[in-house]
Image (cartoon, rainbow over all chains, first blue to last red; front, side, top):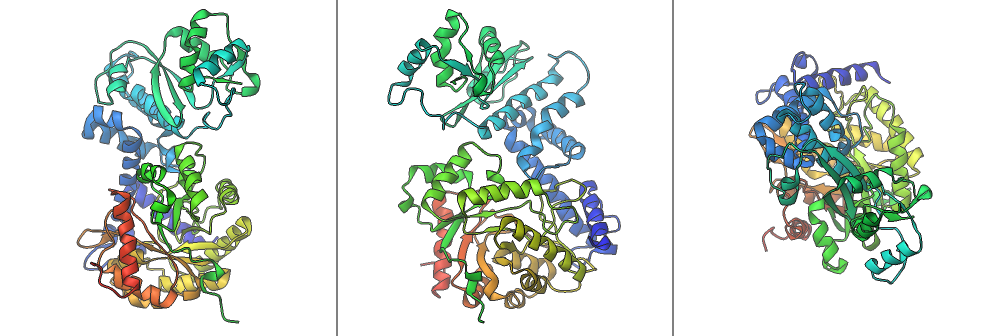
Length: 252
Length: 284
């Protein structure tokens, strides 16, 4: 590797990340339209803008709830703290919720300052489920038969069940039901909420869960080879058609 | 022996970038109504993706030729090549058999960081040797020629020893790689550095040009930025005509990546390209 090239790339990346034009004239031509510093700042602004737009795209509800000023502060803090280390921008926002949680003042899990991280967890999970391995390509257990009847047949046949990668579970300190139902920013209620984010027919939905739903889904394996039989619980048997229709569980 | 045009690769005609905003159109309309000969997909949008985006790509690839266009190869970086990324790219290419695989003459980061920008290289002899060695390694790994795109640039390094077109021509000679000639990028870089775009285009080895990009930049007064958020500007069409004269027929594709309008609006840019090729005025 040419040492001059390596040194130049180290310098330029540092200049972009720090948004600093220091020493730019040593390396970069300027002219009467744009100085060397101006030209570095074009790249520095582009870097921040691209990552900001990435976060706005992945966290639209948080951006709407927080407003552009507060969301901009969250985003700029995250961009400064966590430069991307992945070949894909899709990975960039993966730690946003954890960073928001770590950056907030310590206090109750249901303090208003904890709302952004909780909402970010939902939106990140939503993004992951969109790209996860889903159940759309699974062969139907009973081809050519109405899905609802097929599930009853599956139930009767003593099938075993697993939770696909396209179904994720969240235990949240806030109830975001109103926001999730309307898609509009609304302050959550400070009450715990259990949620499944799941995909069926390539459509992702956030589904509020009862504790007994959550507990059953949580113990189900993700590996089809380890699928489990239904527990002897009439409520789960009655809920099974809904769970299969929404991609929460799959017959192994 | 006379070199084959386009490195012997096909000319699939006029193409568009595959963008999420157009998925409903593509999935609801029969392929014969698309009015597009082929599609270019961003490689990174498909890697690790088992969702709707991959399903749409499968549908499109089943009905039209496709090419894979990457933004993270970082062929000019002094970091080692990312073999994990390359392995996934190779798997994707083996699965979908794209007409070709392309990326940019740039670097995207060092020290493990990815800026997700197409950063410029100093155009030096040492950089040329370095990039050529990496292009050869990538071509060996993928088992196919790499198609390299000229980037838009906003600065020039004092260390540079040659024009970008000469750098690309020598890279082609050293490695046998192909070129994705982005005419809009030539326009942007030439404006930003007060250079002659025609001289740039005329220095490009025509037989290595496999594909052409067209796009619309944003005008910031003192400089242009390659935003792909507007129609192809008037200044680019004469450059495209020059490219067609030297390199045509060659696959032509319109990029539109921000403020994306309806599919028909983007496809209409291809209609303008056809009129330019036929020597007709842009407006019918």
